[in-house]
Length: 220
Image 1: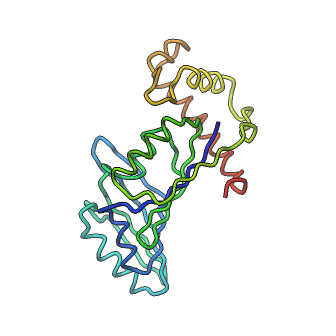
Image 2: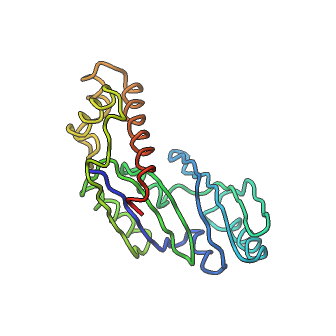
């Protein structure tokens, strides 16, 4: 079962709380993470009615405790762009991504964070774990789960090998929390390296995501 999760949170102590003090709407279309280094590299798009609002927001965010370093920023008319290095620990995206959810969109407005994630293999135990972690670092305002019918996903998009690996991984509990099987067991079963196995799994998920995006109107 494929599911879409839409979450709204007030993230305590995060830079997103600054959007409550400034009349801005912020979106986060691109980012990179390095959990071992405890950093996110964030790319934000900031929109406001007045250019001065964007300037004030950027001035405040660069001194925020969760912002390690401001890398670049620019303002053109009523739109600003900013790239910075932030802390990975206690990040909302990290909680989802560590639990097999895939980022789709993020918006920050009036002190609230709005997230949409896709779970290619819905699992109630994993979802409960995500909610528990969210409640530890934020006030959870809304948490909607939209379950998509299995026939929305066209498995012919995948190669035979991708289908075999993803289905076996699912049946053996690779996508469960905690995992019942890992890359070691699966790679031995298929007689391929862990790197190759991991590539097939992620390539299959990427294809399903691409198809899902074409079906966006069925979700929103």
